[in-house]
Image 1 (spheres, rainbow, N blue to C red):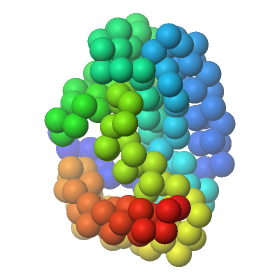
Image 2 (image 1 turned 30 degrees about the vertical axis):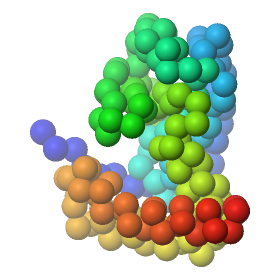
Image 3 (image 1 turned 180 degrees about the horizontal axis):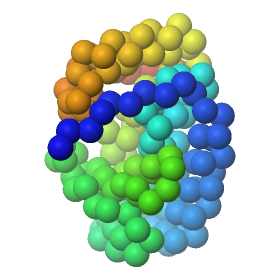
Length: 170
């Protein structure tokens, strides 16, 4: 059954939700973790977002993914696979509100690097964040029960912002 693409006004608690999740993840995955980054719209103050905390965990090597996966499953994360064949493995923790989605990324992963460029740029450029909010609202209205289409339709905007970030060094 399709689920509604639900957008919420920014909730300042999302930051503390991320920090609580980070403590748990660092504790459980300590021997694998290089860095834990809050990504996604909940990481941009003031931005409308789906109420899901997205987190990239950079592990020491690709060889750490199986061990880190087992630890995530032990604490209740559901594996969602490597959907885009980009060496990024997704997991969802539905047991709490907001939900938490974790991505395991090996070092120097292109997907992770692009995500960081995008979210850092939005945090530093209010006009880009505002344009992204407008796009997200339009797409949620246009594709209310098609999360994959909602996501794919944002690709051109994301690529443009990543390009700007790379040019500006931001």
